[in-house]
Length: 225
Image (cartoon, rainbow, N blue to C red):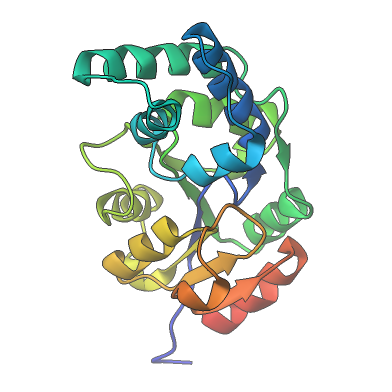
């Protein structure tokens, strides 16, 4: 009906939303720290460091070791982490249950699908390819694609532009405080996947709808649209 919001596209976060990628990030983090003479953290600790991009992840890892690291050391550690991670970004990763089915369903319904992630673009594309969902994604904005990353709204708005839609025709799906802040800053409705890597309680994260299984997403998007 005229005046109703017409949903044309859905943009997804990647880590903790479409993909349980923490095991690969954890493995790379442990190797990086072991090379620097430290015993690496456990999986849950690394999950707590995820969400703001690789440089921030490495900063948190070095802080966790109490290692004194200046800007040059941080830059070198970030480069080394990327080398380790990029060599096998999906070896231990998996899609969350129902992801491939819902992407196929949304694409068949004519919706344009994109990804907006703080993961660097090259490994993000590799993960999508390795896990067999790259064919559904027609726009990808990574953490190094632009001068700013989430929670700045620019990456999400760039994804919308690449999909050829306005923010009024878009829903963002993510799992974290960073994703919620991004959607809010961009003026885009937010669907929160509750089983990812969020740090705050559900009620503390602004969202329009929430879901724990991707089998529920299509009906929620229909309501938002």
